[in-house]
Image 1 (tube, helix red, strand yellow):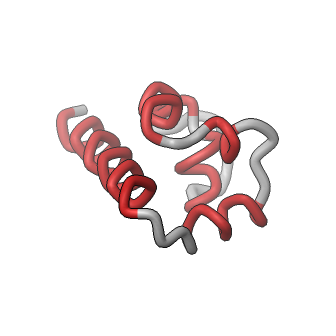
Image 2 (cartoon, helix red, strand yellow; image 1 turned 90 degrees about the vertical axis):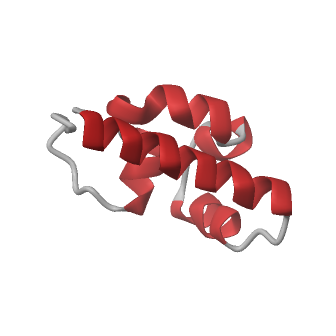
Image 3 (cartoon, helix red, strand yellow; image 1 turned 180 degrees about the vertical axis):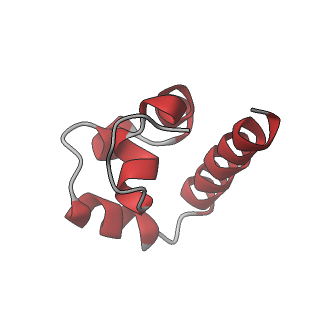
Length: 70
């Protein structure tokens, strides 16, 4: 779906892909999305906060809905 010509890895999917930018702003804290880095991605993926994990799941759910309906 993305036309940026980037590698479609987790970092791109969460922080760089314009196709899902609206979901990223809604579900991922600006701490991670402003000046994103692999270190911040690692911190995000290792959070034990239920709220953070629910937001990541919601982000993924919305992204996959968009992929399936496109």
